[in-house]
Length: 376
Image (cartoon, rainbow, N blue to C red; front, top):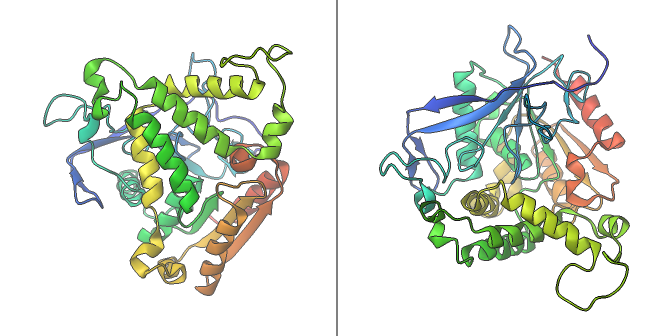
């Protein structure tokens, strides 16, 4: 087996079309849909080495590798996935999927509504974490994968991994939940609502049908991303990186950029508004808000997790205040009370919620050790 660590190289997305309607938890259904996905590594003869990677709010199917002829096209979790990397593609067949409602190729608000011939826009139905998992399961059927060696995700992706172990308990051997929680806190829902209001009140939003007007609610999406980005970083990380550094070395007494942190947030907001879809942002944050496996069990998380049969790896990060270690420990305790096999790592990191995306040596060593012990 190759021991050196490098990227999976140039990759190409694939698209699966489904004509069978997908019933949604909202009571609506999607009549037909596409799922865009990528794969890395080789599916073994037994079809037992597949690992599904679920993406977070702004992620996509492009987990690892690069696109031919495209600069700065590295996958969002490339430091984790590849030959010799913690999720080793010499051993595992790795799958990334763009969720329904997304804006990277899978059917979403920008896609054509077959009933009207126009973009879905405001008519696109609400989708939930459970709906995404159901669509993922259909893709696994299409690929001939009856059981996944593992389902892995960070943040919202971790919620999807948890939902997989509850909706399809016999189809997942290992659930790997990173920097996530069994449900959003009230504060998290509040942050999401402020971000949504920034978009909904943008004059260019046009009730979600801005495509037909040839505009983008850039201001709202920009503000939503700026707010979100603040919550992804820790106070210490922000202070270490920017402090109170002035852009021009002096106070200029105006409302344009003076502090470096202002410049950084505006840059992140502008960049995000240039490629992400506002309706996708709204739908995805609502899916985050709605996720709560214990809701149907009168708030009893232990009862909600009783259906799980997988073994679990759960990791949290010390300065992640959006999905704090205490929220991961809730999962750990509820799973242990159900007799599940749980490995838990609480990683010291000063990077806040974004820690799960970084190449932290302790974190990656824990991930590597766990993957090495998964039998295929």
